[in-house]
Image (cartoon, rainbow, N blue to C red; front, top):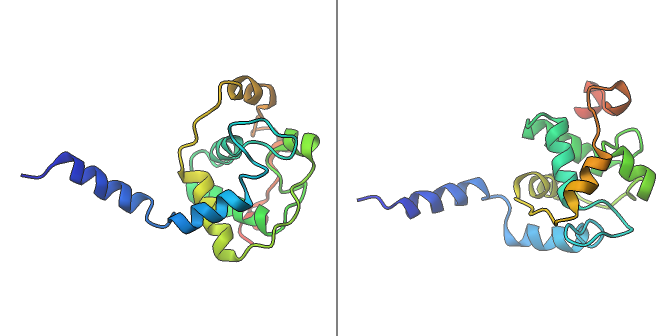
Length: 147
């Protein structure tokens, strides 16, 4: 007889096979210092906001969201920034010296992990919500996203 918990463990091991402990440790030490999700900081938006913005922008097309994150991490510019209110508040994220593998791994962590939202987040997020149908909120051309 096949036990349901075995099926669940197989699903989760397949789903997150490429987000290993080393990647999570590296992400925490390189990204979460500024992008803390649970405490408001004056350095950068919370990672839960980054997750939500890229997911919404791509309309839940995770491969497209991943390409956009990788492109931004490769060369952060105001033009590429999806988080316009965050750029006004914090400025453009400084360039991080990351390998292509790290950029891809970090994009996976941003998009695939389930971030709990602190109680202050929903009101904060609604105050900055973007309408991606407006031309001013479309930072990427197809050519830029696929570079």
